[in-house]
Image 1 (cartoon, rainbow, N blue to C red):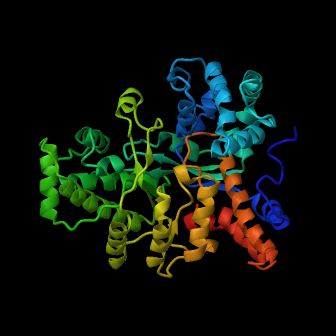
Image 2: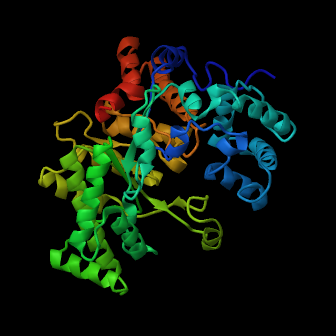
Image 3: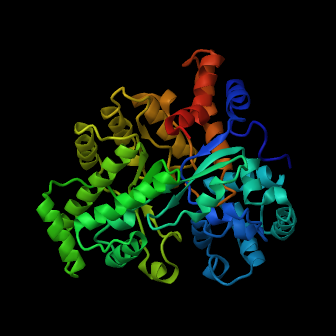
Length: 465
């Protein structure tokens, strides 16, 4: 059987091949949003087994295995690393037409030079071969990043994080810039379980007794200043939908006091509070010149039984059907009207909202910054071929794809970076097919430079790392 992942994988025309190999392939990677553990990068951790680096924490794979009927013992349970890998090997042939099939074989080839199609029969031998390779220094955490030509990456941390690992890396020069993104959602979601416990943790971190809304703002500003001092230039929010409801300061103070007193918070009061705290945070981001990101539309923790057993982020989330347009517009408009709207990236999880987001960004691109408000690449359930094509087509039709800042992994795995290659191949194929059909001119310099900018140049300029 000939190799599956060839040099021209996903490239359907000679123009797509030229665009990819001459303009996209060798561009460095700026991965501006992921969930990699900074402690492992700082320590340049060496993994003992492929299961540790490939299966641990990867809820994409976990969902597929559960669907196939694999017992949880072999997914998140106490099975050995080899047994877990063998269970994944059994699953892979059944992932045909799921992006996992493409990702799996890209990752096997790019990191470990393995051209075989993973299956139940060869899982044990591949497991042993990769484990042997993982003992080599070139396959440490940093080595794996270097293999993929990663230039810059941003992990994601809570305001209470010490950033000690980022500080340790700041004093080193190992060829990759590692920064962080501020993720204060636990301070925003006043209606979430454990909210007051989180405030106590934030209070201990800042040495501020959080007894009023002003105390909360003071604590968050202190942490923003701390993160900024240590090189942070981005924030991120994962919300169902943007909140926007008119409020008064007196109302917010009363809502917060009631929460601290253990009283229930109504849905309307929760929306008022979220609006107030988000506006405050976004005004701070503007002051410090940060880029703000909003990931909108996930319906999280659907399976309460398994949530209680395994906790969040273990594969029990789906696409939500929240109304997005009106409050998102009102929120951005409030900031823009006060000239406090910083660079912004919006991500939708429901593909039904594609055109809403594609047109929303145009409402607030005011000419002050190239591509100031961005519609982010296909996210989570949409970061596959069909999802990325639809995102790029809608962006092209209703905005300027030439200003697009491209791909990110949003991953917890050090083996996820071939997703940038996947994106680049899909991007080049889109342009290449339209050159071949005559819908675009055969101007390879123009289109090639556009592709190179989407892959790297636009993000470099946008974030100014």
